[in-house]
Image (cartoon, rainbow, N blue to C red; front, side, top):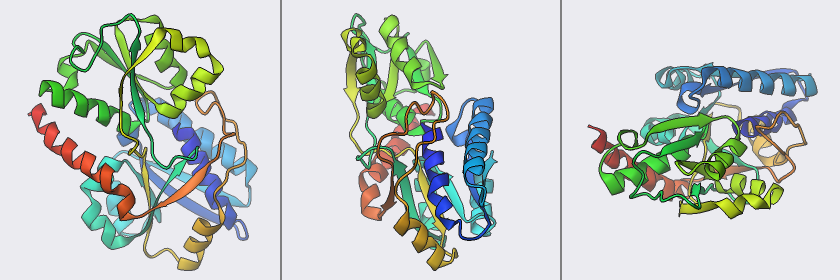
Length: 290
């Protein structure tokens, strides 16, 4: 999924192609990816795909391994645009508001927000209450889905999910998450609703052996992008006013398809109200780890 997000981001900035320009976008990879090799591959594929298609504009993705460092460089104006997990954004919201201009996110359908499903095999007894000794599967790079699952377990058990489940797995392919619960009664998977719906369209038989245990509210964002307040306004306005669509750049099975609508959503504070409440509550629930 993040391959699609970044491809859209890169194409999004290709509208600056009137002049040769190198534009840096920074991201703390350790915030998003468990598999470092996978994150390196994602970055390389995105850069090569974009630069081969848009030679007049060179885009550079900067992988950081320290949230503190990425925020420091943003404050010093060393990088004009950063990508943060929602949790990182809300933890630093007060200071970021003083130096940022626009907030935005990118979606590949008509919905601004994401919704997550907790899936299990239809012959499984898995539930939020009965989660002990089950395997739990996440999509590598989908940060918010794990936070939602953690909050469910904190509320029910008053302890971290890792003390209850048999093992956690992080998969690169969304299809793998679905097939894990299709074939195994001892697994649960947290998936994006749109991913689930897409795979059911491709293979409707999956529904015969899969059940939805729990649905999240439709409030989540995979990431929050921020531009620095000192970016030239003419350039910034041109970017956000003119580009909303992406042409079809197919990279791998990780993206599966880029045929659906892609849209850049500018975010106002009101758009983050429910998500802010979720992370405020999550921060309190996380004290059960201590």
